[in-house]
Length: 235
Ligand SMILES: Nc1ncnc2c1ncn2[C@@H]1O[C@H](COP(=O)(O)OP(=O)(O)OP(=O)(O)O)[C@@H](O)[C@H]1O
Image (cartoon, rainbow, N blue to C red; front, side, top):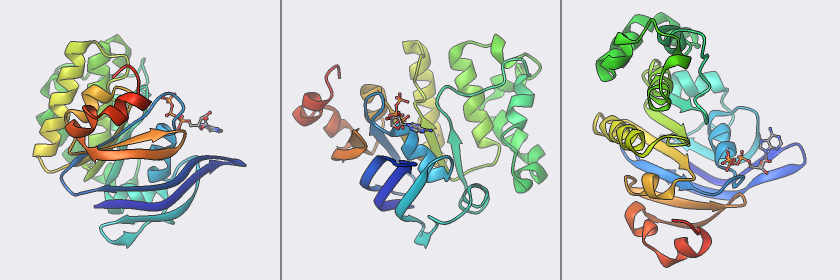
């Protein structure tokens, strides 16, 4: 579905992504794991086409989309990002936060359908729609952030550290939801520091160190490999 090759990302003179090669097959979950500052968020931003200058080849279903605007990537390719740290508006209600996911003209037109879709997947959000998002627990806020990204009914979901700051029980809940999305046919690319939680549910994994991919392999295989343990203490 998505492939990048010879992919570089830089902020001005600072190159932070070096010659990346990565493939995400349709219907799969792919994880990129790496430590703080490895370039995980930069990779997500480069796929969305925001903030970072890029060079290289990015194809989506065989089409070269590296030069597409962010809006086109969202509307035509169906790519959607859940950013690191959720980025909710804590004083706004759950519903208002969800509505922020309809920022493209097409999603605005399909807003009601977006709400139906999200509430059918996450009925608890409907119950809480009038509550300020900031009053929810961390796990519930992650569900709102996921719901917001689903308002545009994407095909490829990008998750930037979905487990960050969550209690273990919430990590399991978010994991289960990611699995359900896969079963519905969505394709998922996530970046995570939490190698265990992300790789164990991934079909394929990559290890990013200082902006370079140093290993790749089957999710659970990678998780148990000595190579990964050597570069990634704490697994
Ligand atoms: N807007 C920016 N301008 C300049 N440099 C940036 C910018 N955003 C990130 N960087 C730098 O790019 C490198 C990679 O950062 P990035 O945020 O992509 O890493 P990360 O793996 O997501 O880390 P974290 O887990 O801390 O979020 C770091 O050296 C960081 O300082």
